[in-house]
Length: 139
Image 1 (cartoon, rainbow, N blue to C red):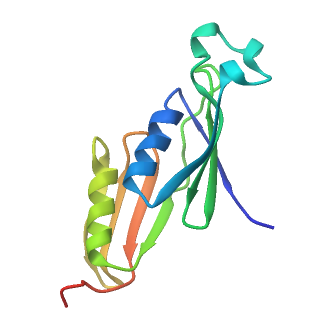
Image 2 (spheres, helix red, strand yellow; image 1 turned 45 degrees about the vertical axis):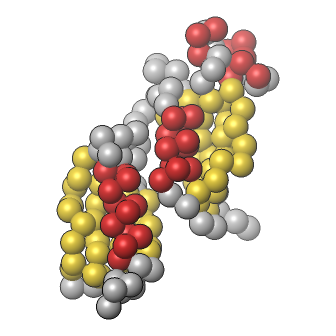
């Protein structure tokens, strides 16, 4: 068994996955648009370029996602992604990337358990915790 995560977006799945592919150590492994799917008749023609199903690999985790029409979409709530990072420089980079057009919930800083820890909700509404388990490369 290999657990995975399933997400829904309100028309921003492709933009989100492309952003994560550039910002995280991640890779899009599959993407199918509504217009090319067996369910193409179930959505309005203007929804055709939205994502029916996509898969993003982040580390050893597969994230599957797609876009839902507004009347079916409910935003993410009650969970967040935790990225455990080995180096403070990488924690700084990832937090900076995920913070672009997002909302910082807890600024990246030293805590009793980590040389870098922070929380952010990104521009697509997903919440992230960055937790550094290592030291600075300059130390």
